[in-house]
Image (tube, rainbow, N blue to C red):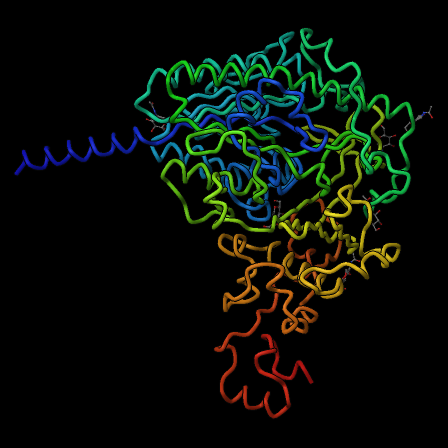
Length: 601
Ligand SMILES: *[C@@H]1O[C@H](CO)[C@@H](O)[C@H](O)[C@H]1NC(C)=O
Ligand SMILES: *[C@@H]1O[C@H](CO)[C@@H](O)[C@H](O)[C@H]1NC(C)=O
Ligand SMILES: *[C@@H]1O[C@H](CO)[C@@H](O)[C@H](O)[C@H]1NC(C)=O
Ligand SMILES: *[C@@H]1O[C@H](CO)[C@@H](O)[C@H](O)[C@H]1NC(C)=O
Ligand SMILES: *[C@@H]1O[C@H](CO)[C@@H](O)[C@H](O)[C@H]1NC(C)=O
Ligand SMILES: *[C@@H]1O[C@H](CO)[C@@H](O)[C@H](O)[C@H]1NC(C)=O
């Protein structure tokens, strides 16, 4: 009996080992503030060679909240920002202390991967407000080996301070931060590759191409173009930011504080061109690291069991919409970001237009690891053409709370200064709180948003890729008048989009993935086009509208207006008696939605 159970245990262990051996390795490279729209990827030849040519580039990948810490919380948890409630870079609404108080330090991807048998490594920037004082309070959970960049030096390219496995911070003064983290990533990878029997997850999160932050004489942080390594100083001397239609436009788009921005003068434009050149140069150190890491995996013979992800936390704008260098906006420049995946079964040299978001990355990785969870607000990204046939969705939830932050030495948006134990920012603008929605299919491409001032904007990104003509402003009524989807007019499209935002702004799990089902519990509506059916017109016109009571710097539920939509009635919504009453009033029962029975009269 005893012998039998020992034998059984041995067999079980061997089985586990076999499963573990099949789990693929994950190499994850996460840059900081890298743009897709100014074509930064095209200036990275080694990334082109090892990732774009050998893997799939996802052109419709989005971050859901365009700023570092909230976006990283979204990425590493697979939960929408309104569910992490990490909405800022510093406390009280964000940063490492908020990550900890929200329980994320004990419940996020690296921990789930460890539970699935992975050995996990991380070097670079993890969270904002993870600093030289609180680096070990508590200890960052989830990594077998780690070496984190720490505030307030995170963006100080030549003065990095890092904590290795929770030890007191070490200073790397004088060394180039992206090279420091590249070396550490290579060392971690070497160690991981020494143990081919155990699956690994290695993350390199360099600070490039984020702007450089140092300290001014008055104690305020001063930002400037990122620093680059001397060996890259000669590059891109003739580069200029693409002069797209939204570049410092003569006629401004946007709403709220963006609409009011003055045009940038030549001094600022020249500065910004050099700023973007510096960003491209800073990315060269990352480009070299990409090659070094991939060659290591190849040499170790583990390439056919390794997935490589390359992405960034959020996008970037410089001079577009008259903006100073920065992010935090809902325009595609800020939210539509690079994602490249290379690995077994992922077609080489393919460009995918399947819509995906950072919310989906945790699910994608856990699915590859054979350890899926059912509490995600996202869903696995289709990595092949076959998967894409069944797993496409058309919506991305966009959210933001708080400040518009100008970077660079000319940056000035207003008189809002903030300064606390975690950092200080000057000349920012409040009222940068909004709910957005990006819907993209073969036939349409829209961005709709509602701001905390109740202002709204809607761009037809297909005909207006620069997102300058707000179809909801009287100025562009004539364009809106001719705009249709599936033959339905503009005035019927807007209430559908608004209702979708209403669902998505407080969704959880399945509802975030299949939001139309929340509006149509019968399950007969799967897309914007389905929802545009004329029989739903009254239902959508009568939905509560997304609105805010006021602008807050964080997620204060009481200020965010209606939270729940009405649902289209199913056969069970009304009793026979109620249906009879409705029929007598001449109201077609199938047209009705939940609500007081007398609502229609
Ligand atoms: C989000 O966090 C802030 C700061 O702690 C808090 O005031 C707010 O109530 C939270 N929001 C929700 C919806 O829990
Ligand atoms: C890695 O960390 C996890 C979680 O603490 C632990 O279970 C595992 O044994 C560690 N791996 C090694 C090889 O120490
Ligand atoms: C250009 O704009 C900046 C920022 O608004 C301003 O400080 C500067 O004086 C302007 N320069 C010129 C030459 O007008
Ligand atoms: C913010 O800081 C700037 C520059 O230091 C200063 O001129 C301005 O008065 C400050 N604004 C407020 C509201 O304190
Ligand atoms: C936000 O907008 C309101 C209303 O337009 C305005 O009164 C307020 O000053 C703005 N706040 C900031 C910080 O810009
Ligand atoms: C936005 O609209 C709602 C509903 O009409 C209203 O209650 C609220 O006061 C408005 N908010 C602002 C900031 O004007």
